[in-house]
Length: 436
Image 1 (tube, rainbow, N blue to C red):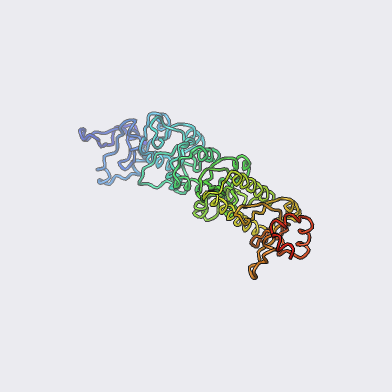
Image 2 (cartoon, one colour):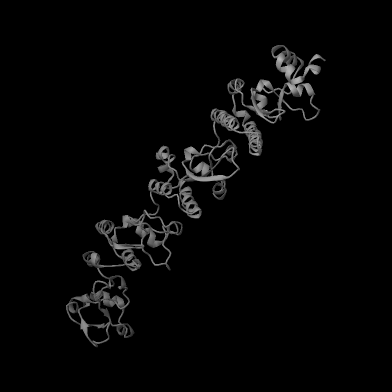
């Protein structure tokens, strides 16, 4: 039957313009009336079998047996691919390709040719490998260094959808490369807090065990941890408590917010809270400063405090400064006490030579003393007047106790002070108390 009719103009076709009636053509030049050819309308017009044939009982199988086409050939598609412009909706093309029988060479051609549209870029069409499948979490980021494939908004495209899986076979990408992503976040200090958080959440999710970024981070973590992409806060120890927000590298900040009292930079607590406390682990932040760094910073703060006091007078501003310094060191010693188990005996022994304990004298001025010259205040009993005049006291602190501050002055301490510094004792105590 096919041999008899295939070369005969015997099949009536539907005229799209409605002008020609009862006209026929060769079976091989026609397409089924049900064929979806919208994807190829930019090339030429296609003739479809008159749908009245179906009403007359002529089946599609019979028409296909005569040579009528179900869709355009792959060869036809490739020869006209550069003429097709799917500027808004390439879905019809992808649906056709998914249903077509494609050879390995066909797939290679589809991977290398530029024929897909990009979202918000009408300059040209692109090869699949130049485009990303815009899932819900990626599309909302609006990243300028990647191109998303143009896709109808009413059709959900994702790596799990049938269209998405086929596009991935063609070479479309799903996740942006990590290094350009981090460079982008490092260079954009004017991003809104919301967008930066969404970007970091996108990365954080893929840094988890088995995530697509896990091995990439492990391989290049040394360089990644130098990039300034994390929102952090710092606070001037002598300031009014105002937090300064800035971008810092993972190797420059800590995840434990308690160390901020000493001026260390920490991951923004609000961002950390919203992330579920996962950023510290994901971006490999050090939790707390090392014991050596803590003592170094404490002595730096001591030096800064001494310089501030040196240039302070006796006005209200100076009085406020002294209150700030005493309060600051009380908080610092509280934090250092929470880290007491981290300090080795050698750390404490070295501190015994340093004058780092601030004490206020009778005139309101602040002096700096070695731990061995200071005693803890006894809150349970009234302090002896002579002891108060001769020695300096501070509130109890486990850190200071470990450094050498004593619980109270002994008789031997008093005698030693009388022998070693008689003039100072006379000056502080007065002649009457001294002789008595």
